[in-house]
Image 1 (tube, one colour):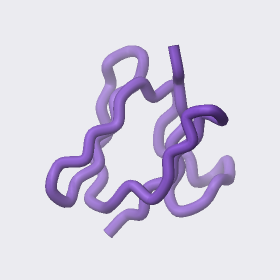
Image 2 (spheres, helix red, strand yellow):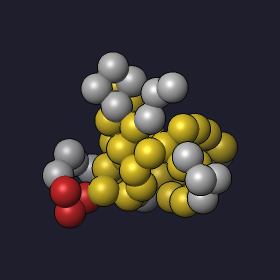
Image 3 (cartoon, helix red, strand yellow):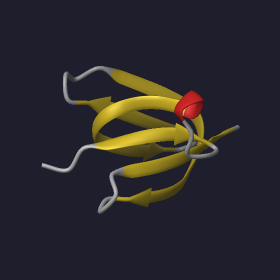
Amino acid sequence: MCLSTVYRDKISPEAIVLSNVTRIECKEDMVILTDLLERQVAIQGTLVMANLIDGVAIVHEA
């Protein structure tokens, strides 16, 4: 199972949006993140990068 940490704009501890993310959906201008416990966070913005090998993703909030 690949779990990722999603960051806002840059990879740094203070920019973490959600950890243990199992699913990332992009719908219109929203990025919807779902974690291992099925908690969801929706961010108005765009997915900038997802590196599934390292388990990181970056979103840019609009």
